[in-house]
Length: 169
Image 1 (tube, rainbow, N blue to C red):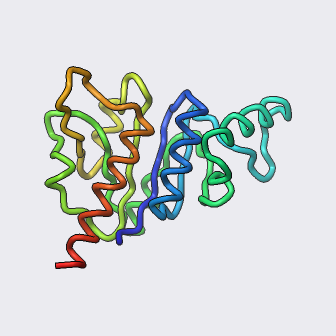
Image 2: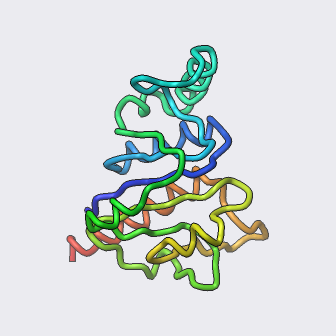
Image 3: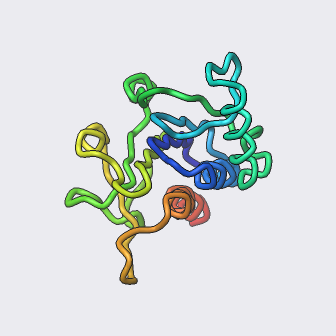
């Protein structure tokens, strides 16, 4: 199985964040990096006002169901991928783009950073340009995209099942 770190940048919904925590726990993600205005659970030396920190932590817990205490996480103002790339991670953006390859055809490397953009606009052009590869989930219906937490689950499944299938052949 590849080692996976997930970055969530500018995710607004605490419910999406909680669901992403729970999904990351289920797939054995090694770390979740929450950045930008993404809400995050209480951290050591948390600089937020206590009532805001406690409210967001409670809301995230409603869907994370304690996964926020099981998945290592950190908050960063902006995602710092420089050190991750230096540690051998491939930066994989989940985004619909002319350069994107279908998730089902992508062969994941041993160390992956899966970068998720914000719910409505997705990843910015500048963020896409920082990625080593862009993958997308092909859509069959009339909608253009999945909810970010659902897309995270599909992407993590796609990135891990390819490895499991490879091991079983």
